[in-house]
Length: 464
Image (tube, rainbow, N blue to C red; front, side, top):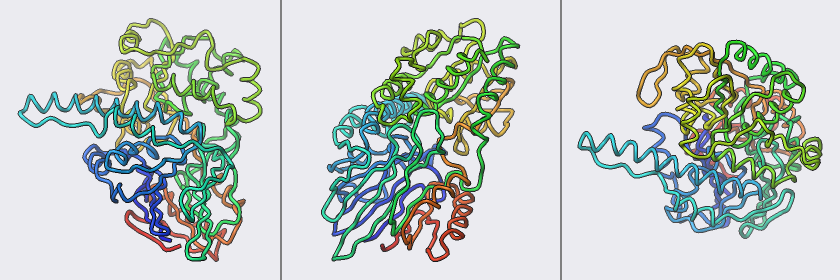
């Protein structure tokens, strides 16, 4: 049994881990690398292994940094099943099509520029047809249900509390009479989420593959977040400004809608117009409604009482491009939620471009943004930013809130790790930039002095 590390190693994007067992290959995740354009094209178009040699794939959740290269994998010859929870399967139907649409749009835009300069056309990373074909290979599974994947490979999905349908994957492996339990954390939620259940804890683990996104940082307390959002919105309203929020279509948008619902119900803010300008966000919100098995008890009761926080009178879902453009002419204060959360693609870039020059407006960053993204530049205080090849002065107010993070911080990661049982002979720290990954590795060495704790680099492999 050998585990290879081909992504999200000392970084947080492009998650890929390949397991070899009984002369077969199982791929854990097939995520998109996000960052500088030149690296993005190279890393996402060239898989570091032969796709035709992969026999099965396991997916922890639907976020694009974990699922976004699945159509490339399938296009390059993978024909096996892709196992994921029911909710993750439903979300990927929309998310991969949306990603393909973005790839097609980007390719058309660059091709247009290339042709003017006599350069060749550019093909999209994958098309909507590729994404549709890949989705057909998904095999839905239920939480806690053990599934036979291949000879010697059984998998159980446990709730990770990160986004709807997110899971940690426990693999019971057998080869040549040797038995090993490998647990993969996926992305771990914070717990005490307004919508989702708390993360579960694997038991009797021999080897642990664990994320470390915030392995050296603490989030703001969840108890204060509603008051902070309320104060920020009211300050912008006093100036007659708009509130522009880059928001991940899955998880973050629904969390924000629930927060705004609670603030409106308590009359902390008025029932001002809220525009959700993302077809993907609309579709993802419908998927939320279809999967109450993922909800915590409080939110389950809210939804079962037919009090839908996602469908209040002041919330409008924008579908067409024409409706999105018309928001530029909206007079008076409003809130615009639009994808992507890192402001790297989608309609949010247009809204930021059109509102960044007005000091009355507020741009609210509510999630982690990868280095070199527009969201990161705004969050770190850049006074000049580049949008669609043009430079813009940042005159709007920019605020950040990290309490909404779907990832556990260093204390929450430690608390989770303390409840994972078993010998844990080897622990592999992934899905974190070098500094937080090394910091969390240090924490794990304190907790498990008998374990071999490593922070793999791209291309490393280890025998189990």
